[in-house]
Length: 143
Image (cartoon, rainbow, N blue to C red; front, side):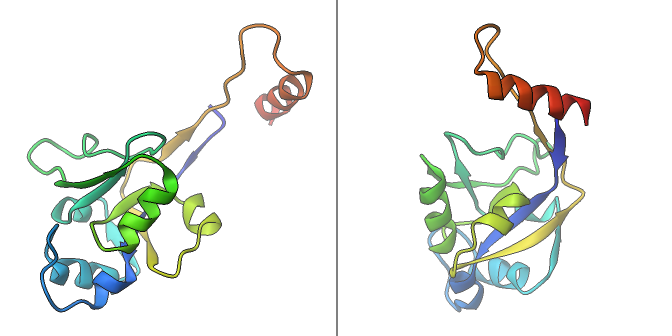
């Protein structure tokens, strides 16, 4: 394990200003959430969730049974996830570096407190790893 990254919530800027109900959830709830700077881990359970099923790190299962968010949309890759959130299909939850590295004019990122962090691991093949990868691994483990 290299480190743990905190999570953020991603909300649509357009849905935050919408006045009508969307087909995947209540725009008023999204609007209220998007107007804040921080959400509690439990709050996305009240909103429809967009999940990247291929390489995303958040699914409904980490929430307690009976308090899990409704799965509104699945995405097959990161770009599709971004666009689904920006289009207002639901809220996304991702590691904090997503907010720093992937700004999007249609998305507002909010700090998500009390959410379990995302573990970051380094994996190498059992044998014949590329020499710079082995060097990086040794440096990372020594830090």
